[in-house]
Amino acid sequence: MRPFPVVLSAPSGVGKTTIARELMARRSDVGYSVSCTTRAPRSTETNSADYHFISDDEFIARTARGEFAEWAMVHGKRYGTLRSEVQRVLDAGQHVLMDIDVQGARQFVLSFPESVLVFVLPPSVEALVDRLRSRNTETDAQLAERLRNAHAELQEFGRYKYVLVNDNLDAAVETVSAIIDAESVKQDRVHALDEQVSQLIARLDEQIAQYNAISAAGT
Ligand code: ADP
Ligand code: 5GP
Image (cartoon, rainbow, N blue to C red):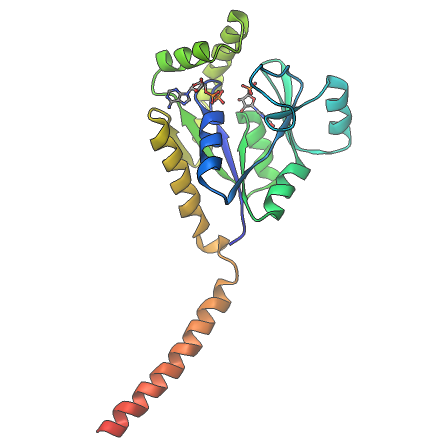
């Protein structure tokens, strides 16, 4: 089976990053595509592990060089997925987990149509606001902008094949994991299926011939 990209989208604060981290801790067959962004790092974030934090000029230069599989302006900053990151993870034989916004997801599937799109909903608006506030990473003005953007983002859920609610974290992680398992055995993802089944049939024919001979000898 060929590994494939798994795109997680949700309004800010729903828990995409938390789900992605937990999934990576549980599964060795999943890798993370580290995006580029022009926003400032949070105190908890590390360059090149959480994001490649780059300047606007560098982002624009990389865009011109065609380095991004998709990019978008989100909450007033640039965010983009490097083609090289996606390829690095796929080449390592891992599914590529991506935390990208709804505009980016729309672009990304054009280059990677085999992607699995998962939209994550908050259990309630109150929970969403609580999570954003308790993360303590945005000013009130930034928080208000993220909530305003959530309005439009929520309306995009229809473009996603899977939609889940991140109420209980453990259950949400297990659901994404189950989606990956189910998608892995889709017929069109299983490598050389014709050949595998032909070999089984050839071996089956040998066994049938053998048992026919045994039963004929016994009569
Ligand atoms: P996103 O990446 O979608 O912006 P984060 O992963 O940063 O969101 O999560 C926002 C906050 O919500 C974090 O403080 C995180 O610990 C918390 N969180 C995530 N999932 C849950 C959950 N299921 N229940 C309660 N808190 C959660
Ligand atoms: P944050 O600033 O909270 O880390 O992310 C803000 C938003 O940017 C989230 O909706 C997240 O999914 C999105 N995002 C993160 N990386 C990328 C990316 O590479 N491309 C796009 N289009 N969006 C991204």
